[in-house]
Length: 107
Length: 117
Image 1 (spheres, rainbow over the protein chains, first blue to last red):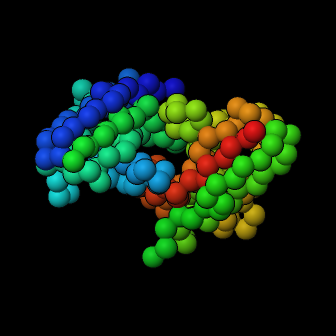
Image 2 (image 1 turned 90 degrees about the vertical axis):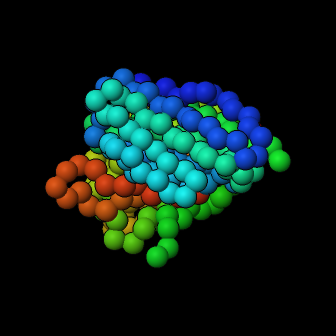
């Protein structure tokens, strides 16, 4: 199957700081989604982004499919951004997930 | 529109017991998926239904796991007998029928946290 690597594995930020999370994948994929797992364990869709750039408030994402990576930008981070961020790529009719980036935003 | 729902939210059972997890997809979604995350590892695919048919069950770990989707609506995932290594979070996701391709955005449920003692 496809290998999905996320970096960094852990990230601690002061509230208000910006950050970039990275997702590398080992082969061509049909699609890609970013998720946020909140402290209650729920997986929240952030972006459905097979290519290009999308923005939603303080979050934006860019996928460069030809170079097999995607980036998630978080600006002006807030404590509610804490949790685990997962990248998932779609291939062979299923999702392959990365191990996640655990983000802790301190007040 | 209601999202994907899962029941129960938490389940604590002893080794050897049976547990049944339920998933209600978004109404009208033909595709239903089960995933799980065990012991802080990555989330892994278990199986995929298209309506009531199993499309792909390559991720099912062993024959102690049985998934059904009678009538093509809700789905159940039964673990019998449960083992310690089955502990983790079980997610369900659904998506609309594929049109013009093989992918639509998937929507995940809140998960069921299973603890096997």
